[in-house]
Amino acid sequence: MDSAPRRGGSRACCVETLDNGLTVVVSPQPALHRAHVALYVRVGSRFETPKENGLSHFLEHMLYRGTPRLPHAHDVNLAFESLGGYLYAATQVDFGVFSVTLPPESLADATSLFAEVMMDPTFADIDVEKEIVCEEILEDLDDEGRMIDADNLSRQLIYPEHPLGFTITGDEERVRSFDLAMLKRHHARHYNASNAVLAFSGDVDLDRAIELANTHFHRMPRGERVTAVAPVHAQKRARFELVENVSSQTELRVCYRAVPDRSEMRPAIDMLMRILDDGMSTRLYHRVCDNKGLCYDVSASYDGYDDDGILDFAAGVQHARAAVVTTEITGLLTDLARTGPSAEELEKARRRHLWDMQTMHDSPEELAGFYAAGVLFDRFETPEDRAAKNAAVTREDVRALAELLAQPERLNVLAVGLLDDGEDRRLEDVVDRYGPP
Image 1 (spheres, rainbow, N blue to C red):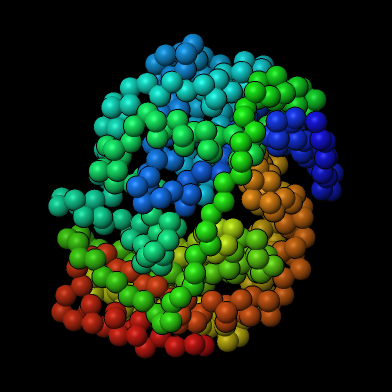
Image 2 (cartoon, rainbow, N blue to C red):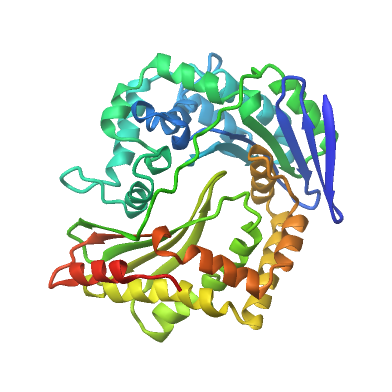
């Protein structure tokens, strides 16, 4: 067993590799009164083919359905809840997570149960689960069965020929085509030691956590690490798409192709995001809402992948305001590309980021996710490392990043709503006229 303790400041994190190749991350938080165990896996829609789209998400659901010892979903849920927690699961574009938070005295039994569910699924009641997932898919469709979810549609616009443009859930036709053989193959390909990170945090003893990992996860197959094809950035000009939908507002997505999560510019991304949208005193809310009253809800986020990234502005607006809100949002990035942030803005962003890194030590879920994702995607760092890198970001770093992103060939604008009285043409004109800073 290879052991590699890693430390940052006075906080310790231990990273060890079991004999089967599974990486185990242990980050004790002895002041807390709950323990946490999680498995992070390289799985998701970006690793799927068009025929398989939605299989990762469906497999997540099926792992709940039972084991040889616990034959029904109710049995699995009752077992976890009797230990003081409940099994949480989520599938993202490029990873999946299963976790449970519960009293420290339940950790040993929970780890045993956790391993059983992850490694010994029976995939029972597959037709029942198909009905549940198909109901979930309906949430993103209109009465005619058309996709109207702005997040899904914006990714399809940005990545029209790449799995990063797939929906996580897939569609009903694909879900109904999944069978036991497909589930078993997908489980074997992704849920193995080469594709996973096991994380312990909270009120856990380091040596005891490693012992539990060895006892219950040593039999996880080694497998092979899955890889993904990087998207090609072939876009030459700004793109616009309108999806008509009867609703009270238009959902806007103003998206810029950004830098990957592992880019050297990642710290500047952190600072840019906090300058744009980290409370109601930051640029986005102040400009669009406080100052001009153009909408009630507006936000900015960064989605980072191994090989690409997206800066995503989202807003729900009156149909007649779609063009002006898009103009204000694109103008924000253009302004930062020209002049950068003020010294006061950057200093505030640094402080708020530092506070978040510090308070992460109060949350076993956040700390486990921070470390596990770092190991899973080969970018391990401590919260203290991240804070130090971000503290070194300069105003020029943020300005240069904004200039890089604010190019027409990186812009994709999506509107879902009813743009009448020429608003569709006005919005399209805003996009067509958009130029470099």
